[in-house]
Length: 132
Length: 144
Image (cartoon, rainbow over all chains, first blue to last red; front, side):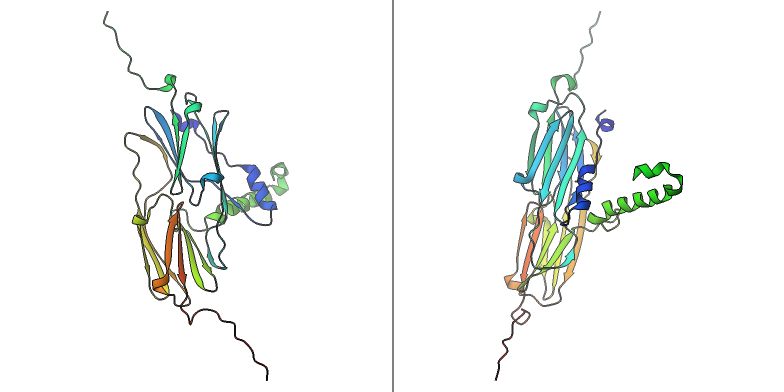
């Protein structure tokens, strides 16, 4: 049920800005895993180099947005460059029924876990059948 | 870009432009084939006194990585296993498990005993100081 309503959206305004700045900062869509159980939705996002102070998790208008700026220490002459300073950005449309006030997030080893607990109405319930 | 779309003569140039933008968007961060991505992606720096490697290893601890340094070779090996949390159903899975081995060949020998490494916030940093004879020296020029 949740699968179809979750969409990724690319932030077009960041792409525009990237083209006009001299010092490139690439916008990266972090890879995510999305899990669900009876209690919650769990989003696991890969953000290597992310630090807590640069990370923002926002929930507004049924949309969860994860943003983070990843800086890299510059160390002399670059011989091989596969990493750049990056701006992680990804949004998800969250289905109704998530209790927005109880969303929690933790960052560990460059991986962000966002827990979205379901509200009372969205939880699976066993309905008792009466014998008449 | 999209205003050109309605101009028939220019529609192919709009397609070209679109393709270029898409290529640039994906190419900048991920140059390699998406089916066989390089893991871990890394930067290699030469400071005058040492080589520095930064490698992306999200979700990995020092136990998952083996680091071997020979005279002029740094080898990073390891395995990242991913287990979905128990009791959860899976909606989307973009992260992948990896078993990897990557070797960086340096152009000058390094001091193996003095090399250090740290893994923090999913980034591995290896610092391998150059041996005394490999270090760049400024040679004083004498005048008669």
